[in-house]
Length: 240
Ligand code: ADP
Ligand code: MG
Image 1 (cartoon, rainbow, N blue to C red):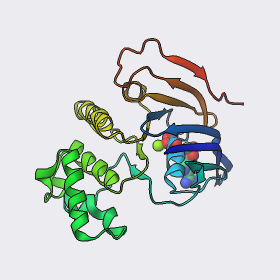
Image 2: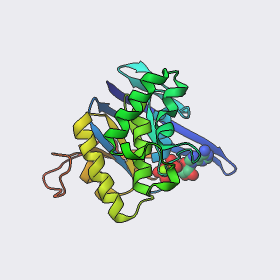
Image 3: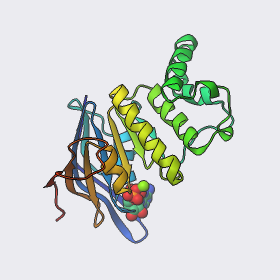
Image 4: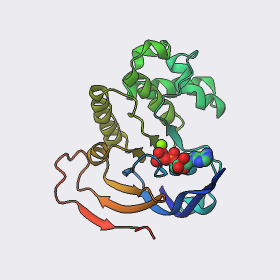
C-alpha cells in the first residue's frame, strides 16, 4: 500500500470570496510508515485529512492508493477525530463493531473482530461499558479500536489527543507508538503539537499557513526519538 497526494487544491466559497485552504499539496506515504503533518490552526490540516479520508472532494488534484485514484468519497480509510465521536447509547463493543455491521460482516466474525481489537487497545474488560463510564484516554482507545476494526489501509488521525490532559496524552502517545510497532499499521496523524509529531513520526510534513501549502518535509532517524538530533531537513515544497 502506498498513498499519494498529487497537486491537491481545496477552495471554499465564503461570503468574503474564495478561501484557498490547500494549495498544491503533494505527499506520499508508504506501507507501514508513521507520518505526521503539523501546522498552525487554520493551515488546512483537517481539510487535508478529510480529503484523504474521502469525506470531501478536492477542487482539483488527485489522491491515489497503489496508483489507483480514490479521490472523493470512499470508505476504507479509518478515521479518528479529536472528539471521540463514540455513540453514547452504545456499549464499547457495539461502538467498535459499528462499522463492521455497516459493512455487513456476519455476527460471529464481527464478535471475533471486536474481541481482537478490544484486546489490542487493552479494553477487553470494558466491552459492555458505556462510553461515559470510561476516561477520556480510554474513550479515545475505543475510537482507535473502532477505526482499526474496519481494517483501513491507513489510519487517519486528526489531533486525536488534543482534548486530553498532559498525563493522559503522554500515555496515549506511548500507546500509539507501541500499537504501531506491534501492528505495522500505516498512520497519518495531524497535530499542531510539534513535540508530539517529533516524538511519534518517522517523517513529518510541516504545513505553512499562508495559504495552506506544505513547506517542509522532515525525515526522522527513529520514531520515539526525543533528542531531535541529526534530522535530515529538506525544503520539500516552498510556497509561492
Ligand atoms: P486546521 O485543521 O489546520 O486548523 P482547517 O483545515 O480546519 O485547518 O481549515 C483551513 C482553512 O479552511 C481555515 O481558514 C478554515 O476556516 C477554512 N475552512 C475549513 N473548512 C471549511 C468549510 N467547510 N467552509 C469554509 N471554510 C472552511
Ligand atoms: Mg483541524
